[in-house]
Amino acid sequence: MSHEQWDIFICHSSEDKKDVARPLANLLASKGMKVWLDEGEIEVGDSLRVKIDAGLSNSQFGIVILSPSFFSRPWTKSELDGLISREMDGAKIVLPIWHKVSFQDVRNRSPILAGRVAAKTEEGLEQVAEKIFRAVQKTMTRRADAPIYRGRITKKALRSLPVGCFLHSNCLNRDYTPAFAEELGDTGSRDDVWNRISAVGLSGTMFSGYKDATDYRRHMASQTRLLPIDQPS
Image 1 (cartoon, rainbow, N blue to C red):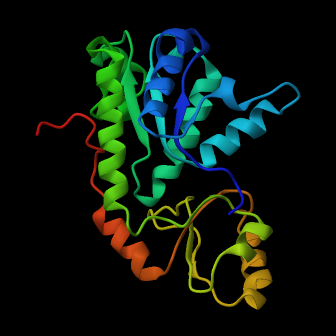
Image 2 (cartoon, rainbow, N blue to C red):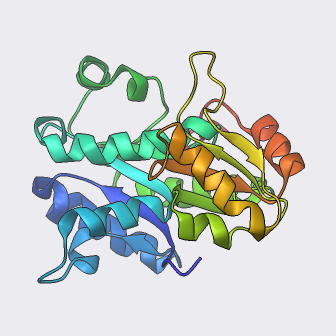
């Protein structure tokens, strides 16, 4: 794909930028990670929504800085929803960081995230950055069969995927199976595939693609319930 790729997207409220998001981005960048932070990627005249969507779709992981100000802002929830929606294929994307919040605070606002192991800024940002770095490195090492495509499906993206790619929607049926799942044939058949995707209202929604159906099954079988940010050694 021609889209720029990042290792980490940092989802945060503007109140936490100076003390947490910016220094954390710098620490991760010093470890060789490519970090998406709004002030470094959005320029005058850019569409805020388009830029954020591109960052969300083209980042391997998303740090979410949970704080009192985070929970009071509607746009941070939209970014979090975008990250969580990418986890429907079994991959763990969201890396939570607690900043000036307790377990009870998080549970009251987001029970799903309260159940995940989190890094805490009270430990120091250097320690947080190290835990994030280790978690990402371990997870990416396990992902030899990771998706070769993640993003909103368009006709152009569909035509660019290789023959044999196993493509599925992140939207699920009531039985929790993908609303669309299919191994792609040659490029001449892609218009028919696009028509079927559009017919069930999935054009423009999030999809994932694997090299083939075998890689998809291996990837799903290898996923663990929680990303080990702070598990004891």
